[in-house]
Length: 300
Image 1 (tube, rainbow, N blue to C red):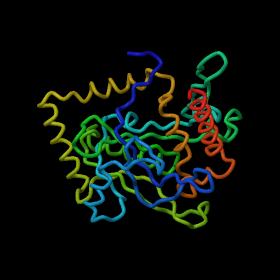
Image 2: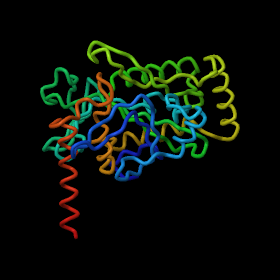
Image 3: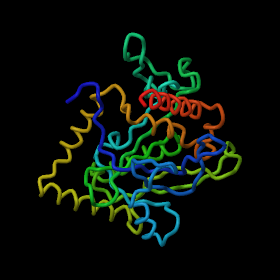
Image 4: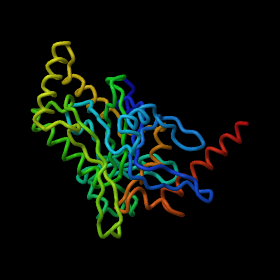
């Protein structure tokens, strides 16, 4: 195994709320009140929709996609949802400091160092650019048992809710989180900070038409079937844990464009409100696009 490279769950698609559109020559986020499932391919119009997006909409009668039946990969809640305080370099888009409020890994002139993490509100180093950043991997459909869709978010509401739900479902099911029939659900709320307008965050519940007791019974049944077939969930969790720990940071160079675009996808005012003219996200996006254009021009 290559050292220094985090081995993360295979991703076959993305889950997003809203999209990035071009207005007056700048790429800005557009709010939405529904999910989108996309592939990992972009064209001039943005991310290409995944075939499952249309399939789920048809099941829903062609309406808005506000609930997605899912399963998680691991029994350990922290392997399914990785949430950290993260700061990205505004010139390159690479992670430079990642912490949990107690300890952090920070890129310095002497290399990656382990340092105390006081949390963004009281950290002089962050200068306001450190945000909570969560990544949730889920399985959608039956075609790829180990291929996942990733949901990236900086929404405190989504991170807190998802973290709580994963731990609660793990507890009540006796640790059978990976076989629980679950559902991502979009919820709305209003706060004084959002000036009474609706903001949206992601919740995790048992699948529609199932009670919690029925969901637990199904989890036990599927777990028994898997064990009978030789499926080793504990080994899968351990391999994933070692893979995440193999690198200082989870994001790789290939992830940078998606991180740049999604690092501020949500805020208390709805989907991304910081990426306006001159904001860190927009400035970084423009810089990276100019750098790519120069590299392409120099190679031609």
